[in-house]
Image 1 (spheres, one colour):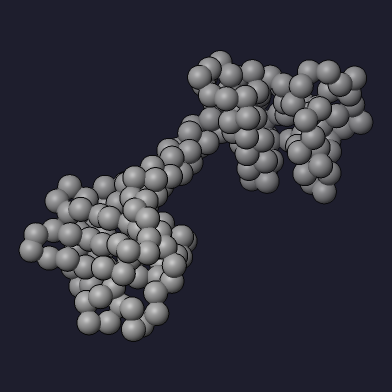
Image 2 (cartoon, one colour):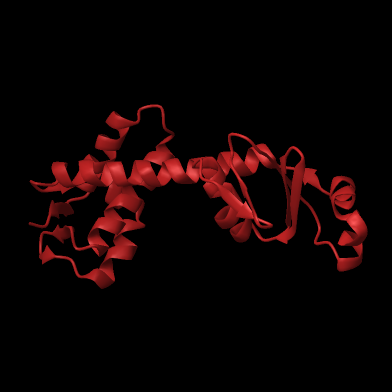
Length: 189
């Protein structure tokens, strides 16, 4: 569980027993995007307030009551503010990178390209990334564009049906240039 404190002198607000999804949706993602966070009938601006996050066991009502909650959190939890905010920031940037790359992929796929060429395009754009990160971006971009109907996937026998996409895209062999039956991606329209 996560516990959080917002502080902007002279005001302090706390939230206890948050799931990671609640923490990210209500606090972390808005915070890293620079948006005002609303909590306890107040508006907390990231440039003026301080956010602190602890991870620890769920607190019972008697552990929170009479102002004891934050002291209990300090004794039983571990501060994870930097980690949580960094992960939220990466998530926001990751989505932005994905959307940017999808646009680049659609330009490249005006003429049919192989899955291996998709990975090569990513390697050219993001050379400092690990191979696993490059492959993850390629797979996610192709998956989303296929499901959005903006790309087609075909082999020697023609278009490949939607039901066959998943096992094909999850196969390592799809992403390397070694097959005798090249898979081609092409932009729709």
